[in-house]
Amino acid sequence: MRAGKIKIADCSVAAIKIFIFPVHEKARKDFAERFRCNSVKGVGMAVKLEKHLSEIYNAMRTSGLFLTSGSSRVNTTTMSWGTFGRLWSRPTAIVPIRSRRYTYGLIEELGAFTISVPRKDLMKELAAAGALSGRDHDKFSELHLHPAKARRVDTYIVADCGLHLECRVVYKSSVVPESLNPEISKEIYGKGASPHTMFYGEILDLYET
Ligand SMILES: Cc1cc2nc3c(=O)[nH]c(=O)nc-3n(C[C@H](O)[C@H](O)[C@H](O)COP(=O)(O)O)c2cc1C
Image (cartoon, rainbow, N blue to C red; front, side, top):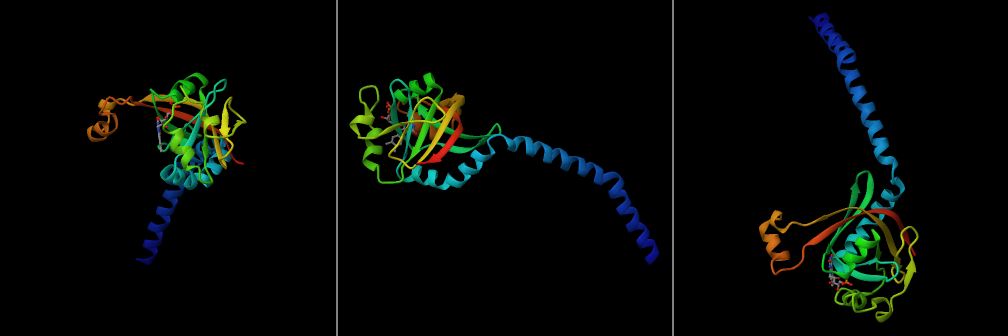
């Protein structure tokens, strides 16, 4: 009886080794290879993003962030919605900008934007940047904010902030209000408000100043 059990066990182990293990081993190798390829691009940036995610989300929730675009005429605006993660093997920021904003045209034209995260009290400046339009205001000079040249894209950062992300637009898509949950659609786009365009920005640089 005991010998029989051993035999069955031996057979099972042999079967695993011969039939199952190679399949799993191949899957494991394929998976490792695929993961390695996926992870190589922008891995340093992804790690940095992960490190600063809670700070970014916290600022979005409590004060807002500066989103800057434009090169010949630089303009900054306030944003408090957006999402940060990983798409197409790249660290990515997705920002929703309504098509009526001056900022919208600047991002369309340049194909890039920066995000600056405040590390000191800039509530007054954020409130004003989120109320005035760059169409008729030079917000940097009126709000005494300091632009500094971005490193990787042809626009500026808000130097008064301590953390910056530089993004190039790799994809965009406009919200179709009819495809959105009716309750949210009514709340956000109900009174003739222009729909948002989601700009997907590959994060090319992320640094503290
Ligand atoms: C806290 C806060 C958050 C905002 N977030 C967004 C946003 O995520 N997307 C957007 O299109 N507008 C947002 N706005 C509104 C714009 O900042 C505002 O309309 C601004 O005047 C647009 O400036 P511009 O015409 O220079 O682009 C926000 C405003 C505030 C005050």
